Length: 196
Ligand SMILES: [Zn+2]
Image (cartoon, rainbow, N blue to C red; front, side):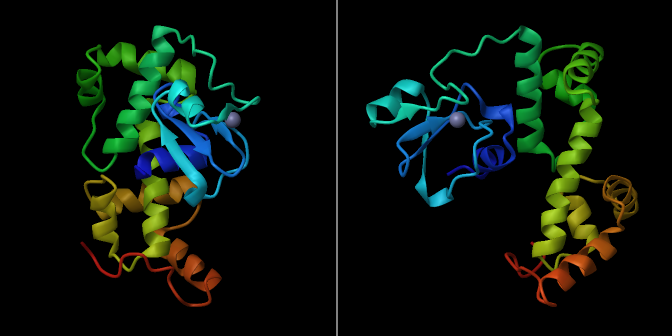
């Protein structure tokens, strides 16, 4: 399964709603990625590209998120969804407001205004939040250096990364790593063993 889709399911993030559905073979129910129901066991999840496809597999629509009902989105909500999806997929690149706007074929000014109204934060702050989230996982799960992590999540340098991280979490990246290490009894939850 595409890791971005799985992350959206875990975070109840609407970025993929209307494009992707997930079925739970254990319960016979299918949901939108944003469904607030309990996070399913990854190995029981099957991904579908339409409600019809899930129904052909014998699954019933969830009563909570109603994946069988079409989503009536205003063009602005649609735009916000496109941008959150773009940010999830490309947060590690340098993504300026103008680049994001160019991607979606609208003006930076309009994108900024519309996103901020619907999400209560600017695209830049959403991007930062996604980067910090990714950095947290790398700090806890790898031995990568601060510079490598800063670059891997899209920051130009580690000093800027450090200041954004600290502002968002209350911890310096090194302190956060030490804390996670301690929580795991001195062993990093290693997924990657070195810088890549
Ligand atoms: Zn559901």
